[in-house]
Image 1 (tube, rainbow, N blue to C red):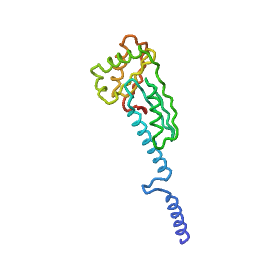
Image 2 (spheres, helix red, strand yellow):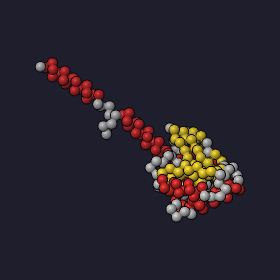
Image 3 (cartoon, rainbow, N blue to C red):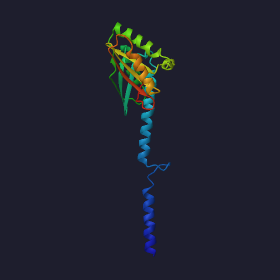
Image 4 (tube, rainbow, N blue to C red):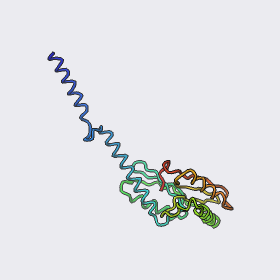
Length: 193
């Protein structure tokens, strides 16, 4: 009987020792590290997004996106000014925790025709009664990217109906060769500035 009690006591002690590798919240140490890493990535992504939208020349005719991989940030998208491309890289490099920045931002070609199309698509999309609420934000939610007569709509909207309406309005603008609707419905959004 005494041997059985000792064996039971030894088994309980081994079980207790096996569970001591937990943190105060009762989570295994590996989970704590994983949660801290996830929290750090989220904080870094929020700071990158903040710095990009605060750029002075960032407008409705530019599209900035990014990807965070550890301490490396990849910038993507299209801009109308070369200074915006270099400015985006500069502000992201200065963020604490960013080791390297890969700048894949495309500078759109200078074209008076594209400039006219940008303004016409802007009026068509944001002049629509159902979409004008998106224009009252500091940076409008629907970005209009025009390259060689081709239009891409980028950004986040509240509903599939708003996405379809913006696409319809952009397609009605004369001299537009094609419209690519990349609008994302809220809740399904990707990381975008």
